[in-house]
Amino acid sequence: MDRSLENTIRLLLDSGKDAYDILEIDRNASNEVIRSAYRKKALKFHPDKNNGIDVNDRFKFVSLANIVLSNDIIRKEYDIEVEKRKISTENTNPSVHKFKSDLRNRESRYKAEQQEQYVLRQQAVNLSDRFDDYLKHTSTYPSINHEKNRDRACKIVSVKWKNKVVFDENLLSKLMGVFGPVENVTTNPGNKVEDNYHYAKVEFKSSVGASLAATHDYSVTTDHWNHLNLRKVSSLLRSATLLEAYDNQLENENPSELSYLDYISYSILARA
Image (tube, rainbow, N blue to C red; front, top):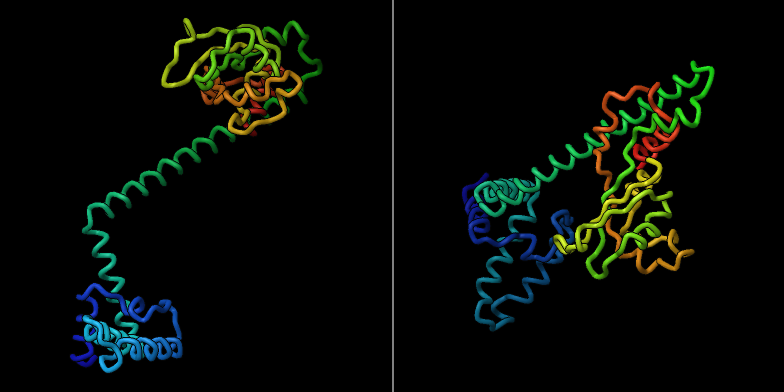
């Protein structure tokens, strides 16, 4: 490339101005668009037609932008140099480097969480298949009493709600009762506020109720509580979390030791 053209590109780059911005065109603009934009800018900033203070500089850069972009070869070289300088700036700028590092970390955490959820779901699916296979080879189903003794899935959830109101055991029992019969409710002593929220332990009679409560989306107001006239109050609920981790429940489970309720509970959790 001619040295004068190289100097033109370097002068434009070192100025901190962008040829496309100067002509106010897109980076994929056609030659016709470039010519039209140059004519408009040249007429606007030509010293003979404009007496502005900085008109000479502005006209000079309009001319430089036109020289660079009107020639396909020079334009390609210019685009390559712009990209190089952009990458170099990003690598040396601490704030940009930190932003990119934080973004990579968030992506890594997200991928790890997705992988963990995938593993848990696969465990639940495998457990479900093993249970189905177990039932196919079992001539009689477990009795009701036997099933009750073998109900292994977690039945207790930690309920969290906004501190705008104090829920007593009776109200919590009604609110959580839409997911299944409640055995017991234990609130914090004096319903003390922790981190701007109240908490309570709710024990369901069945693990199915606990699983339904734990997988409900409390950020969305639903009709679950309409028949109790508690729809507005229910909007203060924020979450219900199983006290025994889902992955701990699934580890080393034996299909022959699962009840129907266990099977349903794990199915709910796996499809949440």
